[in-house]
Length: 328
Ligand code: SAM
Ligand code: SF4
Image 1 (cartoon, helix red, strand yellow):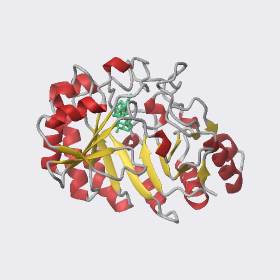
Image 2: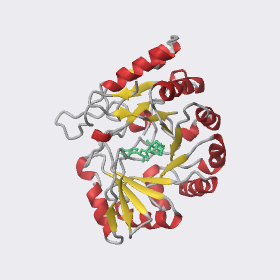
Image 3: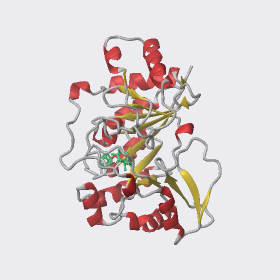
Image 4: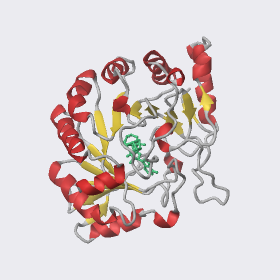
């Protein structure tokens, strides 16, 4: 039996965080000084990651595995780890979410190891703004990483952008023009209350409808039918084939169709980004649990998934862990 919750949703898309560390300090994600990183012994080893993902694909019906973080390219031995995951049967589709800083040097090796696709996060095309947003002067590295991903065949290359009011919210059309010209699939994502500083304010969030209104000043954007379980509300641009995604995670939640489950870098299953509970797989794993036992615990962890993220509920409390430690 797969990963089914009490509402009948089936989780087939596993997000695996490989580290909580990062080489950027995006203001909406973590403080300038970084965070108290997880101690090394608490992190799953490569063998442990492969074991748990194997259980997920062999016994739990997981078909898609996305490696994320923190910044997953900081994980030593990433290429070898991808190669091992690509050998699993049934072979999962393998994707990576990255800030792109190290992608120029890694893309071809990752592709050869079996990585299928990559999502690169980039919120601005302006070098000075990039520094203000990420606290590092590395825009050129991201752009080089994107080109390397295309050259390596990690296509379609997707670009994720978060717009912040008064910072880069005037860049929606420029980002789309740039992505269409370069052949990247752009997706705007609403800012969520998952920052380590707990500084998110609803009024500051640039909403999906505002983003669409901005895009409509320069493009003809029409909804594409068939959203399915995909969170991206997809829009055809200027009659196609170009398209843009606008993910209203907060203003138009897709929780009812959510097919995701997460494994943190320290071996905790989270059934939702916003879950307040986690289920520890690392301890039983290290105590010698067999695959049946790990699968049983994993199923139980997903079963209790809440109906929705509850951001609008009166008693909403942000999860203790920030996005970078959960695995975005
Ligand atoms: N470091 C990698 C990266 O930036 O792509 C992977 C991890 S990062 C947490 C994954 C994605 O989450 C990025 O696209 C980032 O922009 C997004 N993100 C981080 N904090 C967010 C927040 N508070 N709301 C919405 N998206 C957020
Ligand atoms: Fe790092 Fe990604 Fe968070 Fe930016 S969004 S600080 S790149 S983990």
